[in-house]
Amino acid sequence: MGHLVLVGMMGSGKTSVGELVAERLGRKLVDSDAVIEARTGRTVREIFEADGEAAFRTLESEALAEALASPQPAVVAAAGGVVLDEANRELLRSGGGRRVVWLDADPSVLAARVEKGDHRPLLGDDPEAAMVRLDRERRPLYREVADHRVDVSGQDLAEVAEAVLALVPA
Ligand code: S3P
Image 1 (spheres, protein in one colour):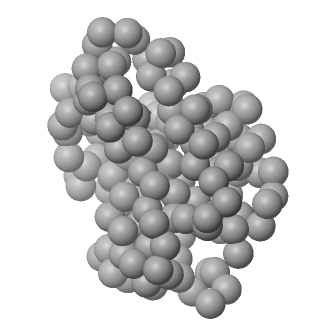
Image 2 (spheres, rainbow, N blue to C red):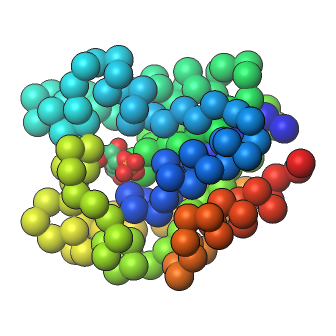
């Protein structure tokens, strides 16, 4: 199997679940936000504030394309906004034996568990309102790219990791 890509909203557990799944599969975890922060030496928030969201999205598309082009099958935790760009969506759908798993939950559930912080400037002062708005905009886009959807509500990280592993060939 090619890359295993986790998509979904902020707070859905892509990075934490990705770590568990990568360990079990003996693969590397590639987290698009971490790649950008390592490459630029700046936090996601700093990039948003200094250069704007569009500049961040360009870096994000580059990080995604690079991760998917790598021949070594990895687990890729793709940040919440990757689906906004049509070229990214096409890339995610373009086969290559990869599987895209959408970690999904109601925005109110995600808002309650999401941590604000230096890589989530879009949450602002009212994370729940931001999540509801982003969920409305993005739900069809996650659906468009996903091979599988896992409902993460009421499941801890280990349970979600098991559900993801059950979807992929051993
Ligand atoms: C964003 C999600 C964040 C980060 C940035 C924008 C988004 O990553 O890339 O704050 O637009 O959903 P996570 O999905 O890893 O939280």
